[in-house]
Length: 417
Image (cartoon, rainbow, N blue to C red; front, side, top):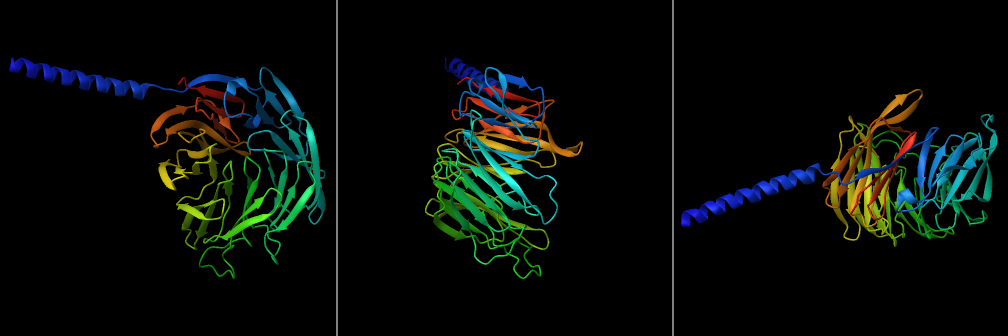
């Protein structure tokens, strides 16, 4: 009897082990996200914009092409025609408004001035106002940021470190000089981001362009500073950053956190890099060892996804805790974009190779990488025969759908939960 019992236990243990292995194999072979919809366009699309955070298949999608912006819902129709002399199209974060930036003089010569016009539209294509500015031909195109709350515009110029704050009717509220007694400098970095709620504006800029540490430059550090303004241009606080330069800042949807990159390069090409996170009062929350090119907050503002070409890091801002780091081999693919679900539980990354074809850089061999809150691989989706000029990626707030846009099409993947 005892031998029989032992035999049964051994057999039962074997069955449990076998079932466990089969279960793991089934789970590893299961692909939760399946292609739900794919649409091919008649002409090349430069970029895409989603107008809502959920149910991508049921809501309008905007395609920005060379000559027009199209709206895709039950059918595809032209929203507005783009002028031949337009320079760029800028969308607010939620897609409620967009701005078309154009120049009135494409034949201007050095030392000439030309008019830069910023036209602001609602999602339905109706123009609500325009701003015309005279700019030096030698200057760079100004930075334009559109508030998703009311369509108000903030314009910045890196050469003189000045910011212009406009109201929702296009009237100038405030003009701000970030530094006093500085020189005209085209190498100065300037980055601006407005919260989704539209109440606060994050700005980072240096007093000059930077040089490598250890060089013979008189002032090798740009002496960058982080600023926080109200939407009316009132300065709430500013903080000096410790390293030599900064190229980007990002603010959470509710304005409770601000992230800015900060780095120093020495004469040997070594880079000391960090991302500094501040709270709404200007107190430093944490520093992370990454020089982000892209920064994405979750909709609830509690989670932050930081990305550079070869790595991504997910941060729990409420606990000031680094959750995971994901690395790729940049000789194979680089990280071009990322997106988070509403609470940051699911992250999606868009990877691709960068190649130079027919006079332009283009991304090829795209791949979607989906990770959970602990950094575990949920799924990898290889996309065949697709390329893109600018990355377009969005995961739904409830994580049920993932949208990715390409040069001539878009795809929506869906999981049934």
